[in-house]
Length: 251
Image (cartoon, rainbow, N blue to C red; front, side, top):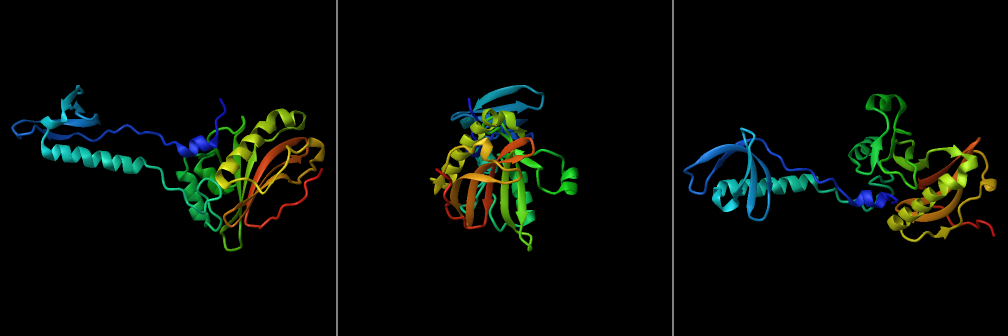
């Protein structure tokens, strides 16, 4: 089954609810015990005692203070695990044109759809380019992120690049990724203002990006296409602040 980034963007990992051991009392306050809150259903609460034994108790048998604590604890955990509201100005994940390098770094670290491919020590030496990639494969390949900045240090371009593949397997390895990226971008940014066929290998020039699709995005444009670098090829998405107009792609 094909894994789409759209699925990952919509999902969050459900974290189990565990708390530190605390004192619990029964409804009339006549008895107490220490234990760790584990979970709750509509009527029952599961608690792990300090001796390691786990049991269920009807929530009505707990004190009002304990019931209030449970409600507050669950609300707090749900708030922590709730995904952040997407930025309406985001062009990819939660990244926006005009973000500072510090803001981009923070968003990358918090992202649910991207992961660091190398450690932070190496990031300090190499910068952000090529250090983050998609958690899920797109059309069977992971994509790495590259960034370009204005003179003032704000984000002006994002490139999403697939792994390079030998030109002999260009269609077999890259077309599925190209198709899925087109689907993702259309879902995020609407129908493309221009859409062409998968670029032919014979039309690719070395180190020249050949776009097939164009979208209008917040503050700029997004282009999907391919390029050749020596004996290898890759599919690329470029998010740029340039206002690119549709052009004739050929017959």
